[in-house]
Amino acid sequence: MEKEILHLKKIWKTTAALVLLASLAGCGYHFKGVGLTAPAGVRTIAVTVLENRTSESGIESHFTGDIAYEFTRSKVLRVVGADAADAVLSGTVASLVSDTISHDAKFMSDERRVAITLDLAVKRRDGEIIWSDRALSGREVFKVDSSDKLATERNKRTAIKAISKRLAEKVHDRILLDF
Image (cartoon, rainbow, N blue to C red; front, side, top):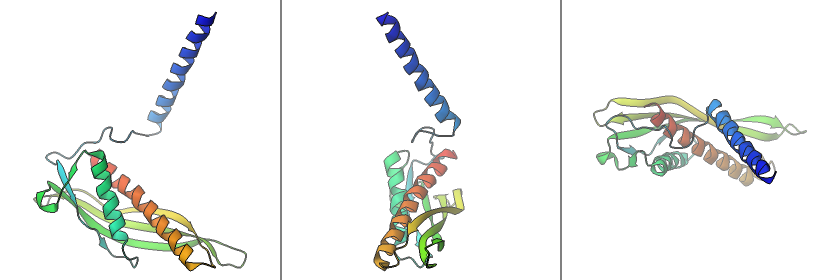
């Protein structure tokens, strides 16, 4: 009897694991690094500092650093300087828009949403564009503290950093999943 119970538990665990794997496969989820391949002939990449076309100073460094980090972390391509790279990722932080999405009882902003758009391209040494996205965007909501403008600014910066991390992952995966 005890062996039958152990056998049933083993069957149940195996079935649960198979159902979980099947559901993950069905929803488009993929494990980081699985199925990622570099474009033919590209083993190294340079990530140049993005140009900032917004009024938000310093955000280009967040986006540049986060994108470089994603490539360094995955190890599919080695990040090197532009002079030694097989391909160079460059572009701009093209826009940043912040708008109110909710108000308090006094019609003061309670929450705002920041939306950022990047214009990026990856070029081989010979100038051939091997990947580009002119309108890669992300957005994040942040809390407004009408009594503390510094707290609101910190919340906005935190939202921008969250967008930067998500878009860096997206850039990395799109570049490597397209090949």
